[in-house]
Length: 485
Image (cartoon, helix red, strand yellow):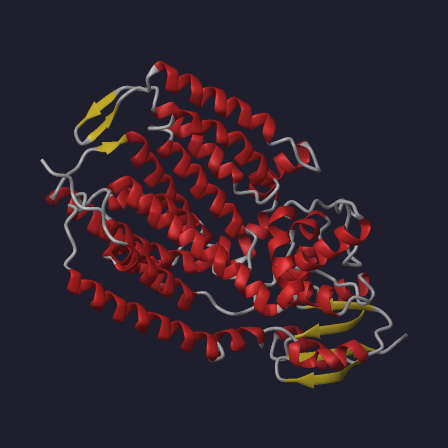
């Protein structure tokens, strides 16, 4: 039987799979905001500056007056480097470019995982679109993006190692990189343990099945996992960095309770409704067109669902874990010869997509501009010239912005949260803004200035309290000063 003709370069470049991937990339481009609005990015940039200037890793706080000198680990130091490089090269545009490239790599990585698992590019692209909807919860200049990239690489290695077993030995170097990049390495380690454990147990239960690993593969996986554990301790902070994710989970209660992305999923929100819809459709499709599930697939899906239901930020995790599994619910796409006339149609679509991209890049991002108004950016010149002679109580989300742009003014609190929860400062901050013993707390911290949003209970209280005056007010910023006693 004659073999199928090799596709020409035009069919490869302008064929249906390429067109789907390009369309997905353009969709991601429109979803990623051109914004520096994430509150963490500013202190991340300052972290890198300080480390480069001192030629050493950060070990204590130097940005605040409430935790000055306290022990602190820069636990995401590798993930900060690309953003700082982008910032030094092109400022906000450079940070946006790094963010866009990271998000594009993640979504296209999800598509590749789904295509690898299902053999169906249409199914892979479709589930990747839904994954993009969930993943928008963390679209922005965030170090977490590089943690998710490590997770995608881990999943790719596990599946690819079924054909090329030695690939599992790339896992220890991956975990070495991951532990220095982001605390999400714990998720990767849990998934690896679940994958190995379920691969040791034979199971045939309805549509659920599991074949035990052959002895050589079992030994390779166990050896790779055993080498991954000591690799975690190859970091600048030793066991303390390895322990940090557990510290976050069990000791940073105020952080988890008060930071929005740690809240439970709102099923009335578009993302919550979309997730429920996907799960209902999956259940119906399984009844209509049942397929056999590997036990680790079901376990990964349940981990993703549980995580996303409990914490909104893990919608991204659900997207990564669920997409390849959902794509497998569709049969592999049968190869066919593409008609020559389709190339012309696809070329026209590519030109149209590129036109959308150019239009997107040439026009300002209105949503990004609105997001930046959350910071005192328009008031920066005044604040830099203002003679601060005392402690400043600041809006929590402005802390990092002030650390980068008002370097001579130590902050009360910033979005690192951990260090401020340890010493009680974050609780004091919450009590102050919730008007619980506010004046006494401000006295205890010797606060002379309050830099905050105008229309808040705190500002109302102080403007009606003798001894406080307004030094400056503009749009979303007000600076109050207490008379010196």
